[in-house]
Amino acid sequence: MENEEIIESYPKYVMNTYGRQPIAISHGKGIKVWDNNDNEYMDLFAGIAVNNIGHAHPNILNALKEQSEKLIHCSNIYYNENQLKLAKLLNKFILNTKVFFANSGAEANEGAIKLARKYTKKTEIISTKNSFHGRTLATITATGQPKYSEPFKPLPAGFKHVKFGDIDELKNTINDKTAAIILEVIQGEGGIVTADITYFKEVEKISKENNILLILDEVQTGFGRCGKMFASELFNLNPDITTVAKAIAGGFPMGAIIANEKVAEGFEIGDHGTTFGGTPLACAVAIASINTIIDENLIENSQNLGKYFKNELLKLKNKYDFIKDVRGYGLMIGVELAIKCSDIVDKAREKGFLINCTAEKVIRLVPPLIIKKEEIDIFIKAMNEIFIEISN
Ligand SMILES: *Cc1c(COP(=O)(O)O)cnc(C)c1O
Image (cartoon, rainbow, N blue to C red; front, side, top):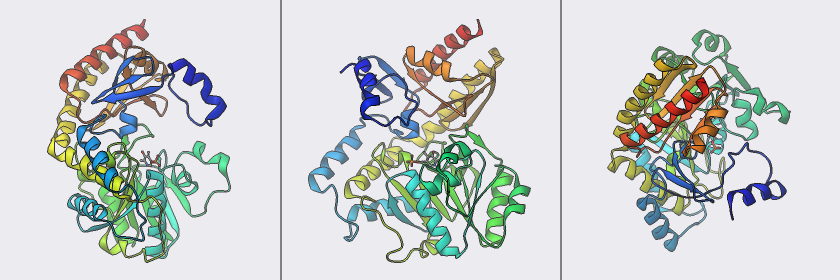
C-alpha cells in the first residue's frame, strides 16, 4: 500500500487519538527509515527516544530470533533466568536496587506511585508543572499539564503540582501526608527543560529529612540519551525509585520500576503484577540493547556528539533571531523558537528528516545514539536552508 491509501483508510478503523505526520513508516536501518512510497528519511526522533541503538540492529535481531525460538512468554508465577540477568545488569548502573518489570512508562510510574504509598503509608504525590508521566488515570493526574487530564475527571485523589525548579514552593507543599516527589530530571514533553544541581540536591535533601521518596521518571532520559546511562548521574542523584521504559529494550515494549532495596520491600506478594511484565523475550532484547550501548561506547558518543550537535545549533542561533535557546544534555536536545515549530517539522520531513516539535515551540532532537558527525552536518545544512526559507 502507498502512504496515501493507508492514511485515507485509517480514520475508519483506527481510533483518532494521535496528531500524525502524513507518512506511513515501512522499514528502517541504523538512523534511516523509509516510508511506504520508498522515500528515505534520517530519523532524528527515534520513535520518541526509543530506538537508541538505531533501527534493525543485528544484536536486537539476534536476541529476538534466538529467544523467540526458545520461549516468548511464561507467566510470572514461574522464575525466569533472563529476568534475573536483566535485573543484575540494571543493578550495575543503579546500585543496590531491585526491579519490577512492566510494559510501558505509564505502567512503571503507576506502579512507582503504588509502591511509594505502600512503603511510606502516606498518600500524597507531588509532581511538577509541565511534567509528563503517562496516560493512565493516575499518571495523567501526576502529569503537570491539565490538557491531558481535564476531560477525564473525576481523577484519583492525592496529587499536587509545584513549579519545576522552585524549591520554596516544594517546601510549602510538603506535609505529613506527602509520600513521594516525582520528577523528570529533564522534562521531555515539556520542552527539554531542566533545573540546576542546587535544586535537585535540595529536593533530595528535603525528601530524606521528611521521609518522602524521590521518584525520578527516567522513561525518556534513560539508557545513554543524556550522555550518561541515566540522567540522575548528571546531578549525582540517588533517587529512591527510578522508572524507565522507552529505550530499555531498543524498541521492544518494556518498562521497569527500579527501587532501592529497602523501598522495594514495600511490595509484598500479591501487591502488584502484570501478565506481560518481563517476559523472557523482552528481557533478552533489553539485555542485548543495553550491552550494545556499552560495547559500542554509545554513552560516550551521546556525550561527544551531543556537544558537537549543540554547538552547531548554537551557530544557527547566532544567525537567526527566532531561535531563542539551544539546550539539553547528550543527544536530548531542545531548540526553542519564538515561533511555532510544526511548519518546520513539515519542511524537514519534505527534505527527508524526521524531527519533532514539543511544547509548541521547541524542536526536540533525540536521534539514535549511533548518529555520526557527518550525519549531523547534513542535517544542520538542511535546517539552515529551512531557516533561510522561513526568514524570507
Ligand atoms: C513517554 C513518557 C512516559 C510514558 O511512557 P509510555 O511508555 O508512553 O507509557 C512517562 N514519562 C516520561 C518522562 C515519558 O517521556
